[in-house]
Length: 312
Length: 61
Image 1: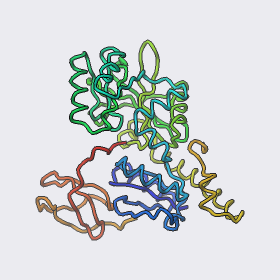
Image 2 (image 1 turned 60 degrees about the vertical axis):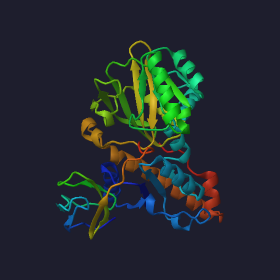
Image 3 (image 1 turned 30 degrees about the vertical axis):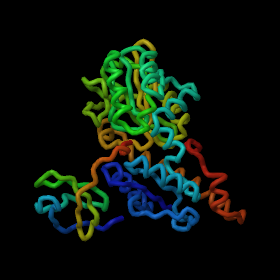
């Protein structure tokens, strides 16, 4: 078995994954995306990889590399479609809406004028988010019209063009915390509750985490959410409204988990490694079947590539 | 996987002496005890460090 691990930095997460593969006697090759030249018609350098797991910090690099590798016939975790859906909040919301998964109401405006109308349609407070971005950056709560106008003017004056899709989300009055569920192969393996006195509850913004038991209802909600975006492995952020129940807020395709291992008592990197190996086994068997049929590995892998969620 | 780093080196920012507390891999980021700069391991053995790239707009999870 030969696994590639795409990275930009080796953080604690990547080191734990590399050590997890190595501890199981698996040949794992860290691949710094800054060093790679991709030849779009030559799959030879990648032929030996049964699976490549993407752990790059850069969405731009992840998206480009995984799209190329999939075209070259390499099974990637997560798949390119899941990365692009999770990375863009509008795409995530659309996928959840299509799948009938409960998610906070979202309105979108494409001009300064319609952006304000989009926010006003939700009422105040409303949450304004960049469609691209992570770690809670530039997520803002507009408590009134004055605030919304100022935020929108800043987005349209100072922001790049992707800020000109104004994504407004209804404010869910969560009780001082939210829940993050780690989903591997459709199973909710662990969860944390993130407490903060601030309305933004990202741990990157200082929220305090504690272990959280996953109910069957929550596990089912998370399974449906991850299926909707086509991810093999993801962290699902849940907002709980005391009156209306649980909503899927966001889904992270390259989850950070270093602070959740001790908190939950779950070997999260071990579960990720095991699931990647299950996918690799399916990928390898597909390749063997392909070879037996004397058909081009590249062609059949493209047509019959194991899809996200197919391995449980 | 990269080899075990056993060498001492200096911070490219403040020239403080740095010895990694454990085995490190190329691509890991260390913090300089002298100036707190984030340093990327560009080679594990021999140990080479460079200033780590700044966080970019598209970084995240």
